[in-house]
Image 1 (tube, rainbow, N blue to C red):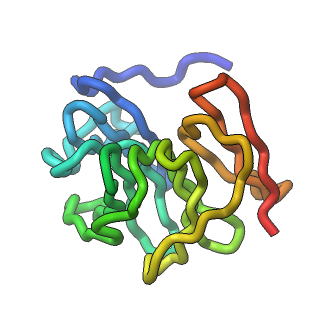
Image 2: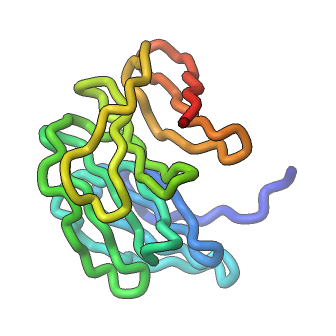
Length: 171
């Protein structure tokens, strides 16, 4: 591999990243912003200047045509953002968990979030209606920026607390 792109966004603590296939979207944890990066033109804009919270994980929802962002902090919210205007919608005002580190979408279109307290993976349906459901992954220790392996239908979870990776099959 070789470096194809390097751009200073002027952020303070860049953390989460996702793509819609054309642009990159990057959360700034300390700066409470979301940047939109145009790799083809080596440029960027500030999509959201103030997220009114500490944005952490981010995922592009192709079906819903939205960016879905999870937040750090107590009773952390989940919000969506329009990729063109940055307009926000609160999907879950209070998740009941603290310090959400990552978000991904599974093979059923459900959203999976990783929280530190409690240390768990919580599943939400695409509408975010109702409470989230604990997936029941054992042995997590500060689960971080998760991803989903569509080939093997499993959640891939790095554990910051003990430097391990947990693979959990979704049934």
